[in-house]
Length: 456
Image (cartoon, rainbow, N blue to C red; front, side):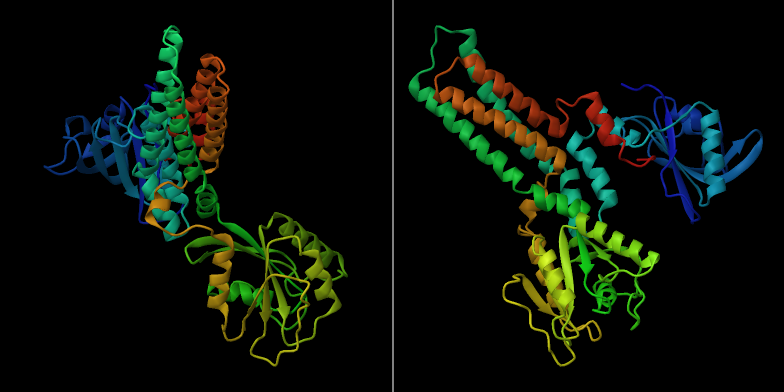
């Protein structure tokens, strides 16, 4: 367990009304006490202050006032890290926060590593590993739905399901190991069938959790959707309509967009990263060739293609070529310029949902959003699903657990030695324990918390 005292600026860098610094550790109160000067008759030094109180005063460095601050004293264990904690609110701006930080470092604190406050909360038993990951999800949430899912996980909803699953596996493992320790007590056929039935129900439990993985990952990272088509088909206009603001330059001059533009939008609760690409055509100058190259790269990374076609013109050879080229990707055909007389006929051998829109008037954009959401979201937006949406790390651990449980079932059905069944079941228990940190390794913790920002 760490025994030193750490400090970091918790608010984003830049100018603002306030900046907040957090100090945590056994010496947090002493470090703050050494540089805090109370102001007024009701404020006291941190070491003399009662827990969960706010003191008004100044941070003093080498006899000079750095800033006026509010200093919150939070004594263990009723803190985020379950350690003594001090939170200093100073004036926002790079210099005041920097000088306060340097002052606290001079008096014995150490600069925190990324995610170290949350890591200490985990190590001190305040939260488990799944809840720790939810802190990062909460910070990075881009839609209200993602925020709700993160809050459910932070509240321990997923952890309770995982612990329930682990308890079921441990009970079965204890049963097997009891028979191994007392071999004269052979497992009766009906008992073996009961164990197999219990493990099969456990497999169903694991499968239900795995079904939430795609939606969970979608809410956390969003889906990448490339907007492609010929020049002047209306790609940039479509991006502006989907975002609800003028983000891309719109011009009747073909080839206005020379580079890719990425913007995230909330589409019916699902974060979608829209990528406006340069109009696809045979490039002329070097600059346009680079735009084509970047458009192709965006297409390779995209999970969904919005192919924009000009509905006021007949199908052009380039349109047919790109319809065939993108046939292997998940795509949505957008028939733009629906406010004009329609002359476009899409060949029946190019399947895919077709949504007519007018980027000039906004007609059809809401239907496009509904169709887009239906293509990427498989689940129902129910509370039960939000409670247990697993991430890719959870998914990998649960898949290993499921494979080990299936091997255990097979060993019992083939009447193999119970040591084989118990070995696989122990693997399953450990894999499930990884989700909440019961069997987490130091490397795993380093990997998870290194993705956090400093100050969290």
